[in-house]
Structures are given as C-alpha cells and as structure tokens.
Length: 192
Image (cartoon, rainbow, N blue to C red; front, side, top):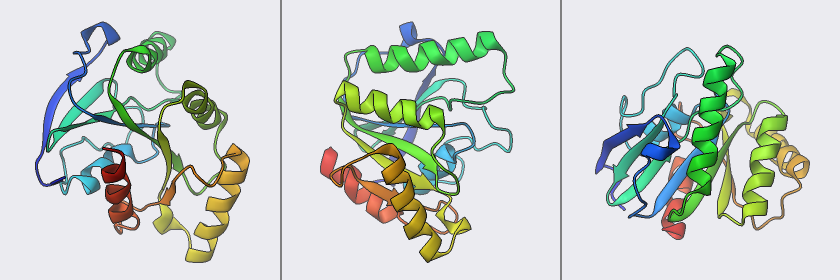
C-alpha cells in the first residue's frame, strides 16, 4: 500500500450520512487529545491532511481518507468534557452508528496515551471491540515522552490492565519521532 497516495475524501456529521462501505476500512478510535490526527498525518506522510488542533475535541465528524484504495476512518475523539451534552450525544450516535453499520472493517486501531493508565472510556472501547469480534490493535501514543524502559513497563501495564492476550497487537508510537510508525504500517498491511 502506497501511503504517499493519501487524500481527504469526505466528512460526515451524522451516521445517516455515512456512505455504503465499498473499500477495506482502517478505523482510528481514541480519547480526545490522544494524538489521532498527528498519528494519521505521520502514517500518510503528510503534515496537515488530518487537522491537528491544540484544543481537544476538534474532530467532530467522521473523516474518511483514501489511502491507495483503502479507507482510513478518523472517528471523533471521546471523553472531552468541554463540549455540550447535545454535542457529546451527537458524537456518541455518530460512533455507534458507524460501528453498527454493515462495513468492511479490516482493522480498528484503538489509541491510548502511553503516559497514563487506560481510562474507563478506553476500557469500554476495548471491551466493545472484543465483544463485537472486530479485528483490533492497541496503539499507544506519545511514546517519545517516556524512556525506553518506561515504555516497556507502561506497555506491559496497559496490556495487563486491559486483560488482553498476547495475540492482540500492541505498538508504542510517537508521531513526533516516528517511533513505531513503520510497525503500524506493516500491521495495517497484514489486515488489508
């Protein structure tokens, strides 16, 4: 898959607007401020394709990117407190509507900030992915903020906290330094 062939396709604000699934989809889910947009930009060799903001909770739509015939799907971040209940409900409907739709789910990339324990919302997302039988991987972000030893320790601690078997892929990444990005590209390639 040629990651240099990445283009923005469309953004959808409600699940009823979502088009039928016609290509393999790699979905990215995680808390607000986990570094989803930065990771997507690094994966796709682009600086500003996915909009990065200093303000968490900016991705309020489901954004589709065409990466050489594969749809990369950027889901709204969950758990951001500074938006209205109405907006949170809309995001929830959007994410649930997406996952409840008949789609070609190749891989769901669940993003978790490596610097902290998985939050209750992270735990719920992983439980949902397990129960629904969707293929998923855990990608830990912001690994550049920790030493190599701390990264190894935190990766093991989060895997244990989430009660995940060894078969579930875990990759520690840094959008800043590029750590783990090639590993993530290779993993995505295995699932496409």
